Image 1 (cartoon, helix red, strand yellow):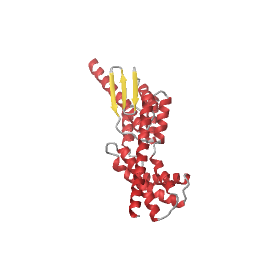
Image 2 (cartoon, helix red, strand yellow):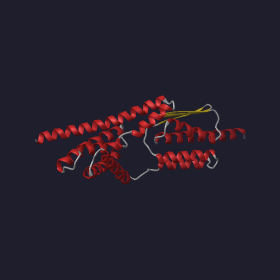
Image 3 (cartoon, one colour):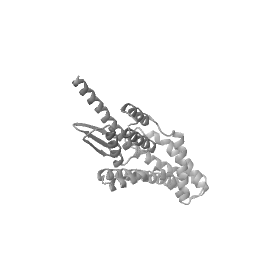
Image 4 (tube, helix red, strand yellow):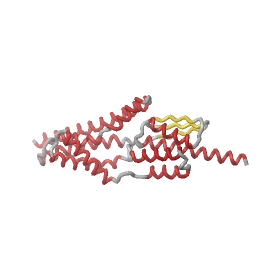
Length: 261
């Protein structure tokens, strides 16, 4: 009987540790800072009355140690989804308050992970609207706004093509910058709509990684130096890929224009 009870307790603790790791993984995959990942995991562990808990999070991995049991998660997908962050945070607090058992928490976490988020059509419209709005900040006219809106929609429409390939974020941002430069220049040749530079700048602004750089700064300020440096490098690589895409597009259009002359 004692052996059965010990086995049951061990199985229950293993599920709880896996749940802690899963919650931490979701926070890290969806843009949470390192301190937030560790804080959420520790809160859930406290709610389950786990003892001797140690949690270390990096941008690409999570280590959770409870007594002699250690669980490691490799993070291969990163993005930003504040809705998922809010759901996981709510689940962790309900566990602490005793309002949610392990079965309910597992169901809600998996439901949050399976949620596909905003529909692609909504993202296309939002990207176009954001790009058009930025173009106005850089001296664009109504003609520039319309062109940038259309370019932004097209750039977002091609992004899912890179979501399941290696280095997809870099290739997607390079392609976005390239398309923005080419389409803005091509539209200017067909219809003189105004400030081409404003259209290009507005079109690439939603591609840039301002939030990622902000997270890098916050990680560094909280003392998570490795995570802060890694996120800053990630942000710079994304910005560099966008800039390289724009440069390639401008050079291509210059070559084509020279050939036509």
